[in-house]
Image (cartoon, rainbow, N blue to C red; front, top):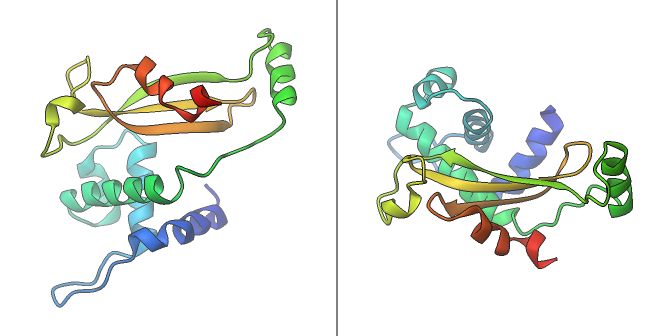
Length: 168
């Protein structure tokens, strides 16, 4: 990610991520919390590895990931991403041998720490705690829709039926 993109993301998320220093310690900067969350979400690194990478406690990594994820849901999830003309996308897929295709969609399970409430709802069919992420990409692999936040127990079809892609 480019530095300018990162700083813009931090600015967009700042209303939900602002924290005050306490008498006990200074709050982590918004940039550090966003960097921790992006690193954890973008790599297969363990919480312990991310903890060492950023010089914070293991629980701080988990808190930062949740704070940033909640800020994204609260402030950015409702924004519609449009990356091009649908006909251009259809033509792009047709050139790859997929005629009349407007996007490629799939879901995945993002591992999470077990929540304190309704934990059984977050245990997926493979037996671990997760949240479902559904993504749609265009012919160039660019994300055009992301739906995240459903408990791991929820079936992909239900996530799809409740997504903006299905309602369009």
